[in-house]
Image 1 (cartoon, helix red, strand yellow):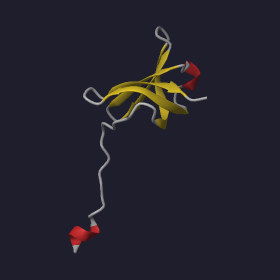
Image 2: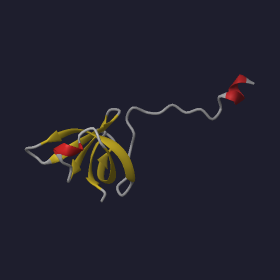
Image 3: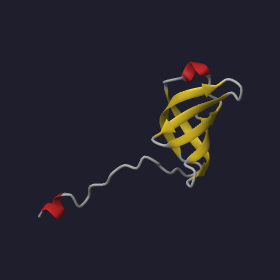
Length: 81
């Protein structure tokens, strides 16, 4: 009976995986003025975001994944317009 109650429960991972072309919404958590790229962190996964600006810090933005390496939980994305 208890097994049936929890049969469909799933825990979220702290290292989500993304596929190129996938669109997500996330918060910009950092910005590097030298590279001109923002940073988005989702758990232990880190995405570098081309086209981000310092004014977008702590804002929810739309992103499209360009490249993702599941082994290192890192990738690159671009802002959606």
